Image (cartoon, rainbow, N blue to C red; front, side, top):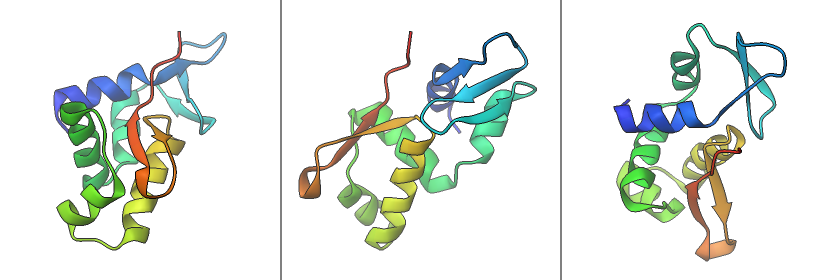
Length: 109
């Protein structure tokens, strides 16, 4: 994964209250051990999801149509990849139907 995508992952982590050893991934409620935290999150991503994050960083958003063309996969596969990134709190869905776009989820303060 490129350094920019790893930075995005790092910015999405929210420390657990009273503990500096664990982080909670926003939207998924999943607890990740900080030792090491980035590889743990990265390990949950497949190569398509890593490329989706890189594309969002470069262009600002991604659509399922882009995933279909870029990866040569069916709609359900593209949707599962995007939905997983939303569940991990890395992307947010904007719009619905054919106008759905996915953008970076802003880190909480």
